[in-house]
Image (cartoon, rainbow, N blue to C red):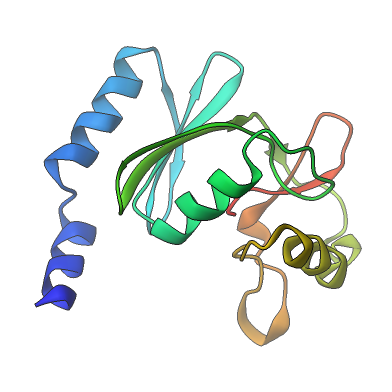
Length: 145
């Protein structure tokens, strides 16, 4: 039964999810994009992400307010329920440097030090570039904690 419920939530989001998205839109949120577990919006100079990934919520809570080298700065985490929350983070920009400059080993080492499990590895050990962005100075930042 849990698998069926999960499939239903992916196909048609819960009312709580829809309410969270609507609240962000009412605050002037401009849609940036979506993935398997949620959607991101630009609100002022910050990104507000609605997520249904419980692991991402846990990891975001661990690094909230912590300055890191390779991970997006998390300003706030609002947990609505175990599988739904809103993460407010710094605004980043598309990664424009050479993908070979992204060191999975260094990122993974910092993740291990922080006790988080980022979603950075794609197929065949390659970097999942959709989860890599950069700050204004060009520093690599992982957005999917």
